[in-house]
Image 1 (cartoon, rainbow, N blue to C red):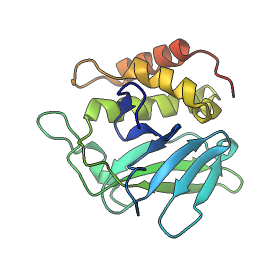
Image 2 (cartoon, one colour):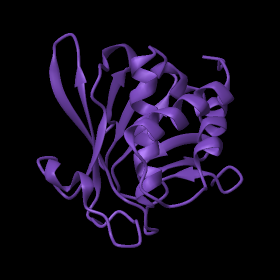
Image 3 (cartoon, rainbow, N blue to C red):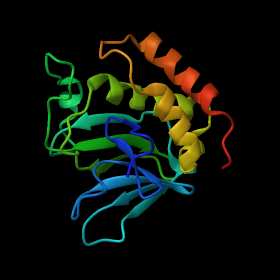
Image 4 (cartoon, rainbow, N blue to C red):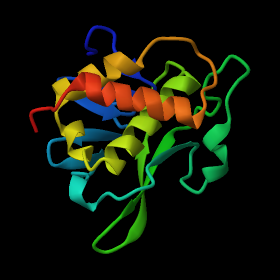
Length: 178
């Protein structure tokens, strides 16, 4: 299910597609990265597609059962793991019409390193800032970027350091085929 053991926080490769959340378990919520945009998958529904062109600045992750739990964004354990285990939310601002929007995902049984979740969030923001968010629809490109971002010390990073490593990951992954 994973590409060479590569995953980044809640992001992992499942059946050839990258997803945020536990896409391998039945009856879960997760967000699939597709060539045409983010696709919210949920039990008993065909889901919802958010085209890349609608997503504006402001992607961030929060943890908890409810999307209004925006104050749980920074709850981590002493060992540097995400503390909340009730799920997560990907928040963003959409255009046409302008609206704040959240996509829900269920967490994996495995814990997430806080540094990995922060690196994922930084990558998403950097891609938006550069107008390159559509690259997330290319599974091979995402694999190369994630491989660059994984591993390393589980230590707190500065915003400057997160931006630097996201920029390096984008450059290392190359232009993409999308």
